[in-house]
Length: 265
Image 1 (cartoon, helix red, strand yellow):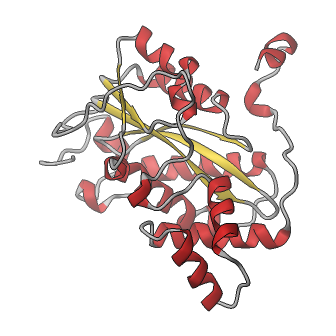
Image 2: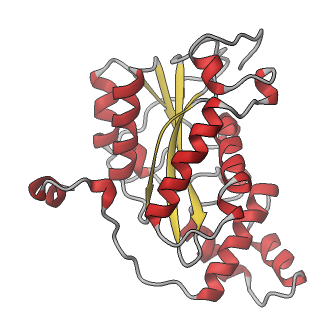
């Protein structure tokens, strides 16, 4: 990040090249991602058996290794993309029994794995929980805090500050670089504890929509192509895609007040 500042180069335009992953492992990771979306309660052992029944020669330990690389776990083990870093402050969970009744009352952020034609990237997105509006996103091929901070800074600049900001306890979100901009604006930082996977259900639905309606339908070759495609998709998602849980209104209609429903939470 400091090198980009010195060179006056946008961080989001640069991508670290990680060690290559074999084609066989990339195919397994793509299939694991699909299975995990549909059966998030399955652990590595049962996923390995499902893959074996599909004719794939893979064991539980290798499935566990790939799942860690992808940042996924079975929900009964607290689904999250990374573990909290030692020394990072963990904030209390603030959304228990809270009715989400208006825009900017509560935002959430999460990270997910996206397959490409060759390789993969990670996507972070920020969501307004009342309207389901996607507020900002970034793509990276490493799970560092920098791309999460960039997404946060954009959302704050474009939409102001929420009352509560909820994440898991991943090191990207417990990093002071991420929490400091929120605290400076008086935002109450909330973090899911063990067993609170259900609280991010709205952003998990977003991941499902993104993958089945965009990513899985194409074979993007570079992070830049993925970023451009996601920009188009999220524009559609916010402005034109009606949501059953929003009484068939769009996130933009709910966020900007042109739509209304009795219970959006």
